[in-house]
Image (cartoon, rainbow over all chains, first blue to last red; front, side, top):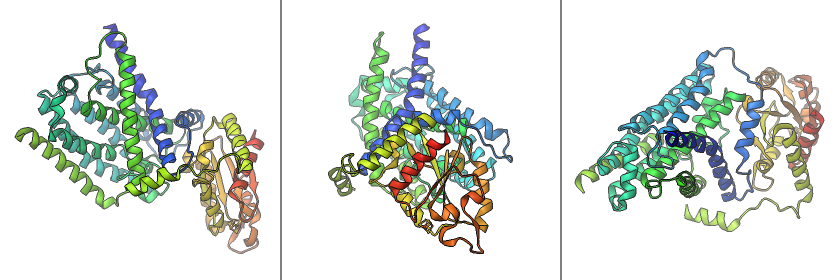
Length: 313
Length: 169
Ligand code: SF4
């Protein structure tokens, strides 16, 4: 019982406290790749601390939705961090079919953020919301289908069991289905977390924004919460990607050293993924908005092919 | 894509090393220290064009490039006044932009800084006395500091930011 609580607390702390660092490292790496010295990896913590101390300016036309959204976002991400296998194969909230709850926790946050974007009544907020919802609707089936391809391969629908099975039998992953599902999930991760070919996290151009456009109206501690939640979302998606597709090291750990060891293994995997993401983001350009559905349709096709590969191969 | 990556890796970091632009670097380091004290090493800047002919903006965008790279000092340009700690206002304030500028100022959460950039921002500069111009930035909103020059160089902009943060305390 106590061990379970310790794992739960550790998971929330690792995701909650580590997410800004992940974003900071990503920004520093991107700056290095374009020849700048760039901000320090700890910069997001400084930003968050400053925002928490600032005044909050709220438009007079907003309703309670605008004020509740930052808390909903942070809360859904913290609950989600209990479902994702972060450093142990068995997360505290594991149950068969937890991936569906996970998806809808992410979507609940997206839904509230889209409403909040509309709430202030600014033109850019509405534009951002409509784009975000379009992207989310296209991305959601792919995630489910890609994860189901893995679940069929591992013959269980419990995320924890999938991770356990793959780390016990690595040969199970040597399969075209695994590769296809990975590609599909990676593309969808880019779309869901607002990364480059779909949305540019560093943009200042309101006309091309998706995520940024919805949070333009937030300030002070609300903005801090929103930024923190989106950092956690990126962290959770990358963790899910790392542990579902490269589960080696995540399962099988037991004993008192399991938590620190698991965190180290996770950090190693995340560093590799962050490097890949930074390289990708400096080398590709943002897609025209009307091309985004094509990209997402492509990823859906990959996910379907992956399921077919499981059945046929 | 590979060629681009190769170029990036081969070129390395082109942000000028301390020995060659000791002045800029010194100013930047002092600026970082002051920002640390006043804002916790994070200053978000919203640039507002109140009617400038865009020449000051070119110098400002020079700050974000690899050569000057102001992000390493903890400064960052943001897309909304609500995210900002500092308004960097350029140009003479034209009659049409006076009201939007006032609203932008109201939308910026406290504590905030306002810096007028260029001779135009100081008093209208070239355009002073024109029937289309309401005056300098200080005629519309309270200004904490002025960075003179037509245009001010990026190094002068960094020095001006430092000055403004100092004066505020
Ligand atoms: S001060 Fe000079 S450089 Fe700056 S906007 Fe005015 S005319 Fe252009």
